[in-house]
Length: 224
Image 1 (cartoon, rainbow, N blue to C red):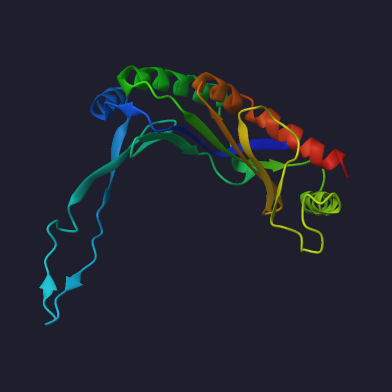
Image 2 (cartoon, rainbow, N blue to C red):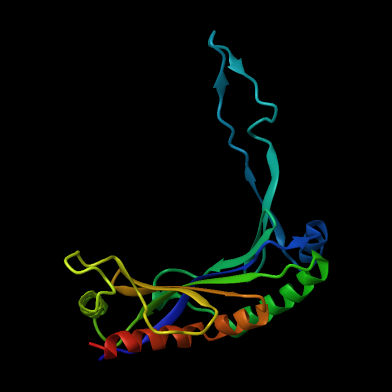
């Protein structure tokens, strides 16, 4: 029997549909050490019917005003009215290492700062987690057994081939909207999504995510 290991591969916390004074948010975060990471426009060439090139108003080599902020622990992306705080720790469970308490503490601090610049009190948040895990048993065998069991209970249409992902049937909490499991490179890959009007509760979900992942895998392996 192996030792169970659950790690966060990627996380993202989205401040959805909220109106911020983004210039002030950016100014404050750059004071805290975040750097602007620009990317090129990459415009395609266009031609007239006679074969002559139509000049672009903006030269492709110029830098656009689109950017994300890159910090020591995570990055910040601005997409419409949404703000995304995110970080990719890695893919292989054994190679992923981090101090989760440090990330949660820093994220709490940054969110408190950012929320000072709200210009409209519409609050909605989503946490997205991609966990990678090694169970105590061979994952593909138990994934297949669980998928077959769900098929027998009509949760997966019988007669179809084993799906590439299955939906975890047990409740995690009332904030969890997505809970799926796949097998990737002989490891469990678990996607979790949580929504709430209270971002502090989502930070608790982030803090407890490794525990949640272990409970999911124990449920899968002990059912078979």
